[in-house]
Image (spheres, one colour):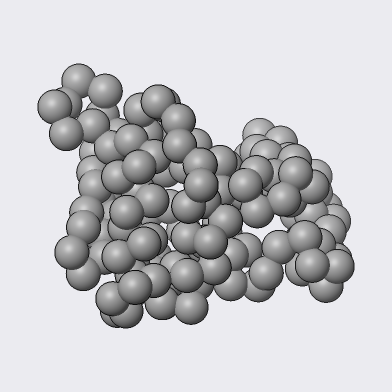
Length: 141
C-alpha cells in the first residue's frame, strides 16, 4: 500500500518510503541546514513516551528557529511535516518548492521500482511545476 501524489495534470504512485526519500531530498535542496535537521526527526520515531515528547519539543523549537532564521519557509516546512498518508498544498507552496528543486535531478527510484511507470524525481518535480504554473493544489493520499 502506498500513496498517489497529484496536481491538475500529473500524478505519481509511490510508497511511503519513497515519499520520505523525496521530502528528505526537498529538505536538502532547500538548505543544507534544514536538510540535516529534517533527517534528525527520524531519531524521535524510535523513542517512547517522555523521551519522545521531550525530543519533539526540542525538535519543534529548532524547526521554528530555522523558519525564523530563513533556512526554510513556513510553507515548505508545512509540506515536509504533513502526514504521509494524506495531505495537500496550494499553489504558493508548490511554487516555492519548485523553485528549490527545478534544477535538480537524479536516477533514484522514488516510486515502485518494478513498475514500468516508476516515479522518478523528474516525475515528482513535474507535479510541482504543474501546480506552480497552472494553479490548483497538490494532494496525496
